[in-house]
Amino acid sequence: MTPKKLIYQWVETFNRIDIEGLVNMYHEDAINHQVNTEPLYGREAIRQMFTEEFSKANMICETENVFEDGNWGILEWKDPYGLRGCGFFQFRDGKIIFQRGYWDRLSFLKIHNLPLPIH
Image 1 (cartoon, rainbow, N blue to C red):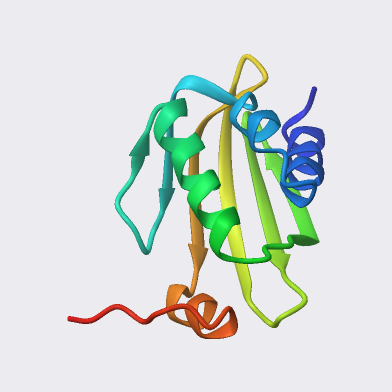
Image 2 (cartoon, rainbow, N blue to C red; image 1 turned 30 degrees about the vertical axis):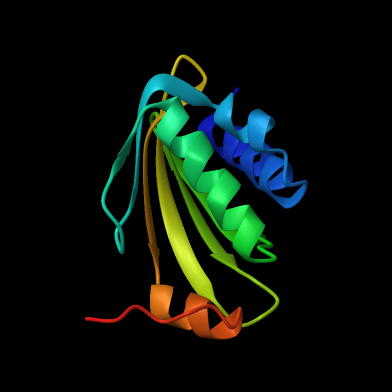
């Protein structure tokens, strides 16, 4: 499957809140780095992140653009609440080996009425 098709599958799985389906899209040694947090290493850490985040907020990913280049796919997205972001996905053997996401955590917290970090 091409990176573009895999990203569309990832979005569909994300919007179904299918945590196990999402986790299974990642390589065992995958790295997920949302730039407003520390990188996560491995499927178990990624599973924990999805479990925690879906329990806190109603997250919906609406695809704006999807691009691919070699074994990379790029997703530009928005949600119904006004949040926008993009994600870069590197694939190996049909699995995500590396993901980096760019989005504004402060806006996410405010939109979902979640506590703001104290520094």
